[in-house]
Amino acid sequence: MIIFWLILGALMVSSIWFVYIKFQAAGKMSVTRWVLTSISVLWGAFTLAWIVSSIAEGEMQAAGMGLLIFGAILLGLIILTVRLNSLISSKKKANKVEAA
Image 1 (cartoon, rainbow, N blue to C red):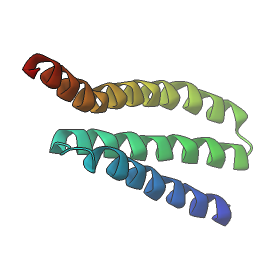
Image 2: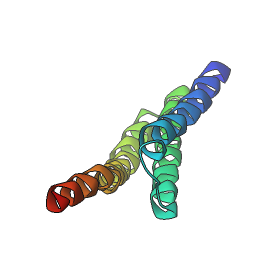
Image 3: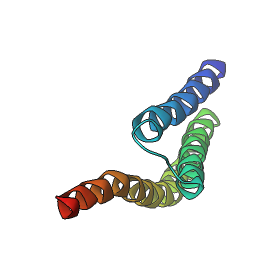
Image 4: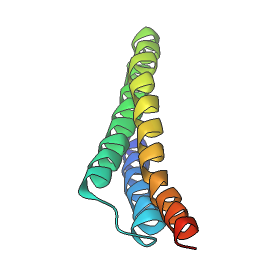
């Protein structure tokens, strides 16, 4: 179980680092986008932790319901985050086309 928590922490740090490299280096990310990205990463970690700890305790039904409920919310957060973060490049491309 300790190895799982170590992997979960590394996964959280690497996902925040990926977002920083991918989007912050390309252009400035607003505070709203950072907050939404952080919430998505934390919610994903919570979902994984819920599922693994439920399975470790032998509660398969709790793991399934956690995946269903928390996973659906996570999917919505990820879609919202990706759509909001991908607007950075599409707005820049649209502005370059209009300027030309």
